[in-house]
Image 1 (cartoon, rainbow, N blue to C red):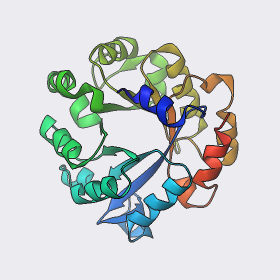
Image 2: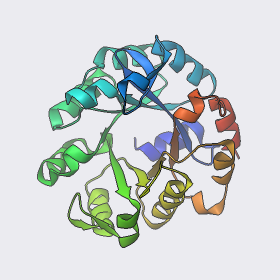
Image 3: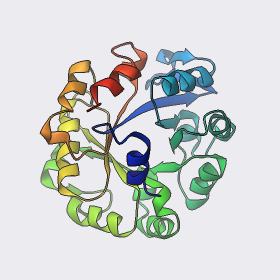
Image 4: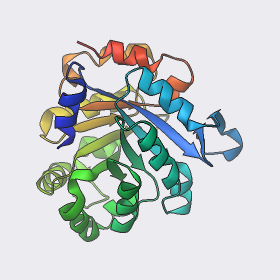
Length: 255
């Protein structure tokens, strides 16, 4: 079953899939920051966070293993297994510490439904192609692109145009693209959502907008025609800072 089939089966009444992002460090749910001293613990037991999200309508969660990113290997395997046992209806996409096919298989064996791959593997095209042949339906490709490069239509990480690269990924059977447009200055914002909407309108692959939602207004804007082709959108920090609840997000994105 594809990621699109799952969306229709689970929540066909949504404009797009609402995907909360949960960052895990040292077994706790956190707000990450470049400076470790500014890290904020949201909840010591991630189970409480997952439970609250499920109660508010979450069907899919993006789990970021922060320790795995630092250590370059999967870390919170037991947590993923536990979340899958306690919330079997919940689909999990996991990122962090993915540098080879073995890492991906480890996450899948632990209970992840999809694994997000990014810069490390994108720079190893031969390796990535082999992985996609075997595991493509379980792979979400993270696409973080500088704004100017996106406008130029060129992807230096793989040394080809975006059009050619996306076509290749589609042919190789990836589950989805998770797209972020990185501004030349400042933080990811609404421009990233607009770029993701444009990308989704131009390709057949499911596109998930990653980042860019900062307020309820950003959510309401997603009901516009420019975003109709988006498969899903992730949100993390605004949820945990109280800008809106996940239940409110689902309500806004409901037909």
